[in-house]
Image (cartoon, rainbow, N blue to C red):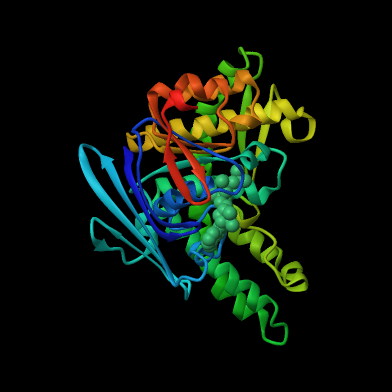
Length: 363
Ligand SMILES: Nc1ncnc2c1ncn2[C@@H]1O[C@H](COP(=O)(O)OP(=O)(O)OP(=O)(O)O)[C@@H](O)[C@H]1O
């Protein structure tokens, strides 16, 4: 699978753009704040229905305009498919697949699979549990629409439960029973899906990490659920008094985490910065492999200014791993390693919302 063409209309700093992409490597380079990440964002939006950088997608409409449009032509299993994504000023998002409107944005998931890798991902191990849950959910939602549905429902019920917990003048017992039943119903499914997913990811990450550390480090990626699925109902009841005092639900998948260990040592507490970054890289590469394994197709890789954050060996590990998948890469300068890859793809120079194809000889 690869994206053949991207058309943008009034999206971020692009008034109008028609761009052809190479099936393998596409490099967008230029100074800061010129519109490189905006290209990645448009692809991410079409894949997931969301932006990777804001929860208010209407911000992506070109200033002073009322709407934005993204159109992608996708080469998938020897067919060309089309995705249209539309944003309007009221915040409404809509999409169509091959010209047929999509009823719920969740139906976009799985048409194109993307893996995004930005400098923040390298901080995944030392950042907070929220970022690690986000990492987990982005991939799982793309792979499994049922998971996406269960997660959405879980968060909806959680919000309602928390709202009622704050209504202390009402009878809490009766109120929470209604929400607890549904919370457990969706929460159990979320926990089970995360457990299976992390087991698979762990298996792949272990192999990759062994290779990039010359077999010196054994990486373990472990699910750390806030509560196990078979104890969820009981623990909710046990914690009710505490939840009423705090006005919030203290346990459940919204408090889950992932633990990383190297040779048995907790990487978050004891790992060096270099070890943490290498583990984050292994995890991302495992994510790509897992997508291939689960869908039978390679995902599209969006690399947002990440090469400059890696040392030369890690850059090589990354480049070697992405040899056969479509990659859209942004960078501020063309480094040696990238120059060597140019024969495999297109290079574009980005300046102030305009894109100029560059011949490698002109660089
Ligand atoms: N809604 C919008 N309308 C018009 N321009 C916008 C809008 N949102 C952002 N921009 C402009 O887009 C540019 C930023 O683009 P982008 O984030 O893609 O930068 P970049 O080239 O990736 O830079 P960096 O290397 O710093 O990450 C800025 O000039 C910003 O003013």
